[in-house]
Amino acid sequence: MTEPARFSKLADAMTALLKTLSALPLSPDQEGYFVELFGPSEVQSIGYRLATHGEVRALAFLDLTPTVVRLYPAGPGELQ
Image (cartoon, rainbow, N blue to C red; front, side, top):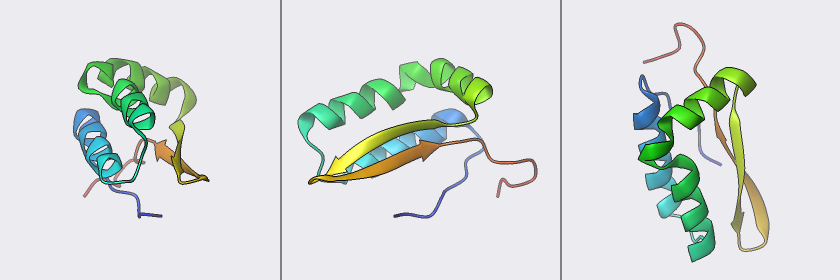
């Protein structure tokens, strides 16, 4: 598990998330799924989901172990 990182722009957070996920031993299907979910063209969609649901969750399978990937807004005053 990695510690949460904070970003001032959603696009930057999504780029960093994809970079982190690309370093994991994911199957090609999982890699494609995450690129579709968190790719640059999805900033508006992810922003809408964050505004309406408070977070976006997905599962990454490392071997057979499911790992939750979460993207959520930082609270007021939490950006560094």
